[in-house]
Amino acid sequence: MKMKLWSVILLPAFLAAGCVGTVSEKKTAAVPFVKDKIEGRYERTVPQVYEAALHVVKLNGTLQNEMILHKQEIPARAIEARVNQRKVWIRVEPVDAKVTSVVVQARTSGGGTDMRLAYELEKQIALQLVNK
Image 1 (cartoon, rainbow, N blue to C red):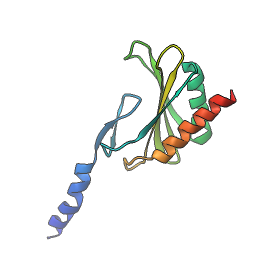
Image 2 (tube, rainbow, N blue to C red):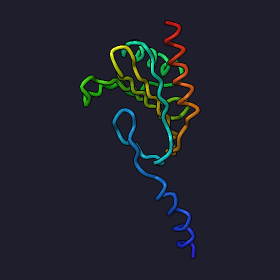
Image 3 (cartoon, rainbow, N blue to C red):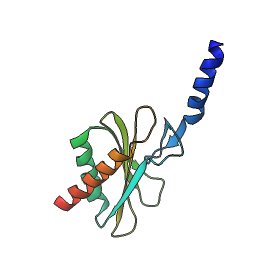
Image 4 (cartoon, rainbow, N blue to C red):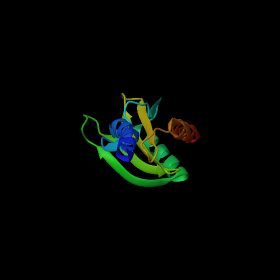
C-alpha cells in the first residue's frame, strides 16, 4: 500500500520535471512550458549592454561563466550566474545595427521560474545603461 501511495505522489513530480533550454544554449533540469525569461531592447552596442549586464550580475550575485555563442552569423554573448540562490542566464545579441537585445532567464534550484528576479535584473540593466 505504501508503494502505491508513493508512486501516486512521485509520478506527477517526474512528469512535471524535464529539461529546458537556457538562453546560453545549454539544457537544465526544470519545469517545462512555463515563462521564465524577459527581453529588453536598447539602442546601444553589444559591448555596452554586455558590460551593464555583467555589472548588474556582480552587484547582485556571483558570476559563474561567460560565453561567446558562435551559432549565429553575428556572435551573441551570454552570462551564467547565481543570484539569491537562483540560476540566472543572460544573453546579449544584436538585433540590427543600432539595437541590442538582452534576455534574462531565472530559475529556482527546484526548476521553477522566478520572473520577479528576471524582471528586476532586466530593469537594473536598463538603469545601468541610462547612467552611462
